[in-house]
Amino acid sequence: MDYAIRAEGLVRRFGATTALAGVDLAVPTGTVFGLLGPNGAGKTTTVRVLATLLRADEGQATVAGFDVVRDAHRVRQLIGLTGQYASVDETLTGAENLLLIGRLLGLSRGDAKARARQLLADFHLTDAADRAAKTYSGGMRRRLDLAASLVGRPHVLFLDEPTTGLDPRSRNELWDIVRRLVSDGVTVLLTTQYLEEADQLASEIAVVDHGRVIAQGTPEELKAKTGGQVLTVRPADAADLATVVSIASEVAHATPEVAQTTVTVPVNGPGVLPAVVRRLDTADIQVAELALRGSSLDEVFLSLTGHRADADAPQGADLEGTRA
Image (cartoon, rainbow, N blue to C red; front, side, top):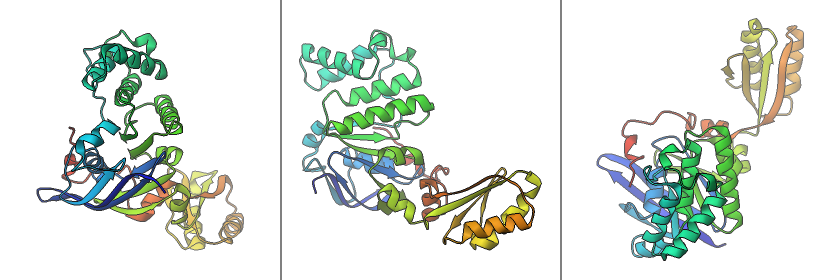
């Protein structure tokens, strides 16, 4: 298999804080590879090492076949990077931002203008091309920021939490853009805290926590690690909630989670659902919802790490979000 990104044993320390504790990655060419984890897990530090913005203290990595230390200049010619926050110049118009990037990359003025026009059209920003970027909505700024990272037609694109703070519509628009890029042969390394985002876009996911890759596989393979299925019960009468929790716990031999009036519990056998139904019937409890479904990536992460992927960052994690 052809790999666009390979990393072996990446270690990076910031004083007494170890941001990366031996990260290994292998990202197939022409795919979206998801790097999933909470704030402070090591996602951004990994991206910065691979994008030649930081040097690892230990380990080695190649991007598009070039060593990120020995061939850093060549790597930079082949990659694009969109960070956690839009980095466009707000005083310039959308067209001027892209023209500036093109000229900095060595394009002639004519070629830079043509590339800017093409990207503005591709990202549905033509009507706003001559407006200052500071007048753009959050979603428009992120699209412009992503367009800027594509001016040089990168082979590998690093997207570091690109949809943070966006509304659902803007997130869906960016997801569609990412899918189009991959269909054109671009390899995307996506870091995210959003389980749904990783599930929607990534063909393979690495779960990172405390600077280590603790699990890797396709979304379905990772979901299977939790035991497969989850039972959800919501009583019609909230007064029955405690009884439902007790029944779910006793039948499934697991500790249920309660969110408002909904009870969820992992299921590890075919007899749990009918047993719960019988117990609910015996207790004369009416239910508004009763469902058996596959595990979500959120439950995978909780099972693997003991906390959810959107958990607060640990102390010292501000190093993780340092911008170039």
